[in-house]
Image 1 (cartoon, one colour):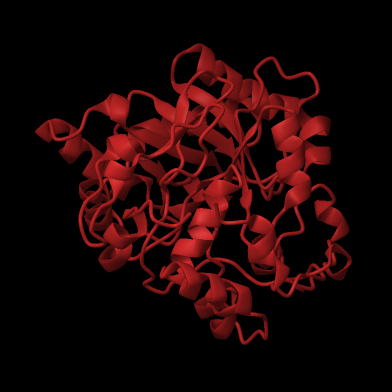
Image 2: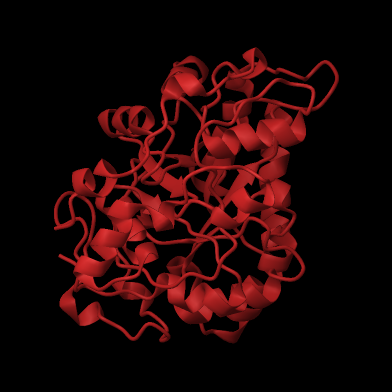
Length: 359
């Protein structure tokens, strides 16, 4: 089995003390992407990004998701799941993890950030044809309607059954009041053309809407989502970009336990503090940006180490005759997280393609 210790031993690690967290976001994770979001949304706040950024725009191939987690609640792939890199994957062969809500989440999903008009409806069709059944979106992405159009067409055609899909969306920062959170769920349902959403997350532990509801009590937000669960509008609810400290502060009196915390995790940003807490408390972690983002780093004019050019990653890639992206995605699932790599339409098929030969 590929050792996570081996994978990270040669990486240029970044120290947590290097990240300057604006006081206004005290409980927010100090991840590279979180820092970039803060910088983009609140340009007046001081922010130093001292770790490799994530988000990838390059077309990179492959996913090694076979036999990754052979025990516990995860259903591993069998050797028969080996497929051609360009072929569609049988959704039934994608491993899953059991959530504390009783439902299962696929360990491989399609992240749709930036998949707007150009990569919305068309790429959703492509993703579903390739074998993706876990699709991750959010109100702020502005693509729920495009994705919903494709979902309606696929479901109406009978090609896909609703029970085989796992759709995740997220609450926007200006929807944290109890009624607003509940209404946001209904809005997402309408946009996605669905009767229920499998997983709904609070996108960030902060709000950005001026006025008296700038910082509504956290319990109000969660109650709005709990109501949605009670009414069958949502099956599981959770968080995104939450630190353990913020989670405990927000949800100490929660009636329904969060099922998922979606955060940035990759070999250059392991986020062990969050993952360890989640494991101890029965909360599943979904890793976004599992491949880092050399394209975005270059675009932003930043000098950070490129994860897929990391010496250790390249050595393992050569040793196992796999692409660097395959090694990194394997690492993500092997460490117990579900992963949602993004991909433009041409590389969607390659992202979910699986193999069981790396051991």
